[in-house]
Length: 589
Image (cartoon, rainbow, N blue to C red; front, side, top):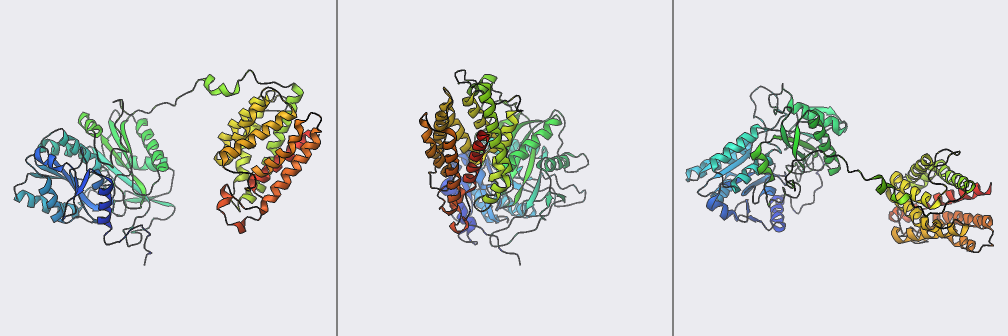
């Protein structure tokens, strides 16, 4: 027996009604019909008086599908059933009685046998009562390619396009006949296909099916129905290519006709638990695929529209556009599930793939061309080159040592992160006989290094070292002496304390930095022995780094780790001790 999937509910038995009460509680424009499971837009009586009502519905579990699209310019009423189950005819009939006036009502139903029967019974009952009601079945599934008689193409995420078109036309005051004709035309101009990476489950049960770890299910339904095939896990680009190729394949009897020169709307639907990181990559790949074939993607929509509980996967919907469909998709609506993710083009222009914004060379280099910065002689510049090179090489050599220390208190990549920054700086430094990176201008050198580590290292380490170097640069802007370098170190430490949220004693890189800075204060006196003081500062940093092994972590990732696991030096602190030793060793030669 499959293990029950964990879900945050109050009761399996009442979860749908509990959800609907929450939906209405946070959306003032919605109401629940007493005695029946029906969601109404707040101004439903105004629709009933002089416009065509738009009614839809189906099983719950597809949120925001159906009831999330109730609002002005979209659905007048939605009739949700139990999870993945058709609503009872009595609820559908109650909705039709409530919202159908002289202009009539259109009922939009996804092409599943249960929904067709349930809504069909209600529609016939409403007609028997004298109500003018038309029902349209939505089936735009492109996965079903059999020529045999089947239940037909399933209604998938493209349903929301049809609902939006019907709702917008209703707001325009179009007749029932005109709306029916328009939505049937839209359905014939639309296609959807989905893929699944992992299954869904209904409350109180385990997964409805299984998908092997290295496999993707192709062309599945939204209730956990098996797909038309499987493929090995691949890149988003390859999966998108497979889906769109199948959807537009001339040999596919359920294809959508899309040719060069056509304009389409693209909907990238989250089937439940797919991250936006993945969805936007999928959208990018789909647009690239279509544009490469001469198809203009004039509208694009990304987000959860018709889901399947926690299923990991997505579906792609294409709708061929004409002036009416564009106007309807862009029309205003208060339906909460539509407008936050689907704004109309603010300028009224079509969606186009735009080039990246290019900053001028002056803007990009403004921080590194300060003519007032002090320059040093060639011999000093060569010495600076050797010091920076030694620092970077020491961190590259210590990569695995630092990673090993980090595995006890972080994600084991401290050494790799620092090595990335070090290698990037080494690359920018150039050869010893022709040093780059403004080695003759220390202030600019620190600024350049700050930019490099920020971009190459990333994460907290990149940010902290970037702050450290940036804050130190002004101290060597007008003069370059041991006292100036000490001031730069002190300014860098102060910056890390200010923005990093740690203090000396918190078991971080600050501990050795602070210890070394305290010793180097002696260099403020001109008569001080520079190398002797530097040696003492390095030893203080090394001792401080070792002492972090017995400190309680009060900042950084280590602060979340159990104290009994923190028995070795902090990797960030050890890294400081390593590169400070490299500075001393190089200058001592």
